[in-house]
View 1 (cartoon, rainbow, N blue to C red):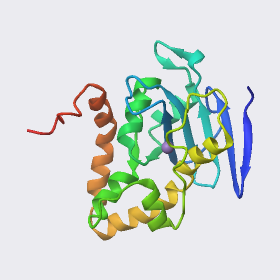
View 2: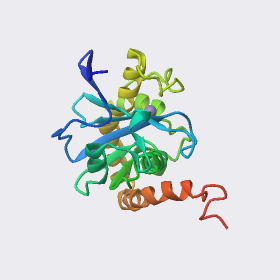
View 3: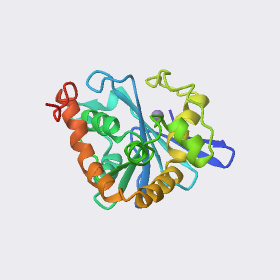
View 4: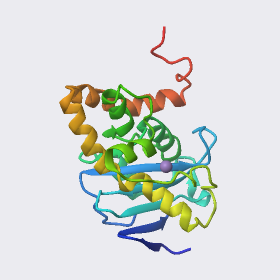
Length: 218
Ligand code: MN
């Protein structure tokens, strides 16, 4: 199983096994998403981590059960990026991704930003904060969610799966630019940043069972 490259319109999608390659610089703001076997981070293993620097290209790291040890997957380059204090990791729903990354890689992902939290803080006129809706309305980008519930543990990911996985990170920078402007307009950027600082801990609280009832509820 070698690394592969897929050309899709103007985008290049690189698929790696086990880890990011040495020496890959994705800049100071990296869009990241994860695909797992399901929604229970304790049970459902992390299968894929998608990354983009915002340049229109996506890097997919496929995590293989054989490299899963007691400390989680061995993926030193990926772990270095996730914990690099100089690189902000941009997610849509960071709470879940931080929990999955903590559970399966053993690292606290920080610092982070989250487009879902940002959208909730400024788009108070709607309860539709899914990535598909936000990309359509704020970026004018149509993305398919058809592969969302496919088998991400398959040893060979299909072209459709790779395209879907890439589309979850390719437009996050553009979305964040729109949302950051709205946060500034509404005077909520500082509040958003405070919430972002809490999100890695929020993910760990979820793993400890403090999601329901929520630790902050009465
Ligand atoms: Mn995704």
